[in-house]
View: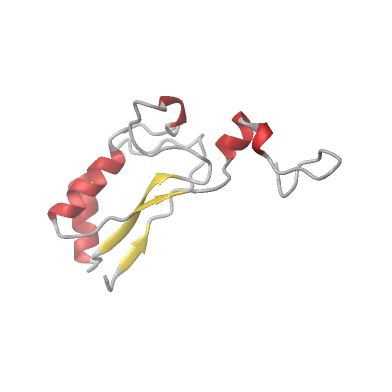
Length: 118
């Protein structure tokens, strides 16, 4: 079990550009200097977007993700310094599914959506 862990929160709006100036070496070195030995990085966020280059579902890649190799670069740079990188993925409902598959939403007996704030 790692002792110094960070959960990198990447629930980022699709309108925000991400990864444009990302430097994997600087990222990993900063973690190492802070004595972080495990950082959880995102593969898929609660908006439903992917944080990596997907051949099977390119439409699900975060629209603001400039560097489609961001996750891969994070993992590689951290592993080079002995930092573990568990991956986070949303595993239930998300905004992407809600917008693209309204038939999957929970509904009450009258057909109204349940637990949706949109």
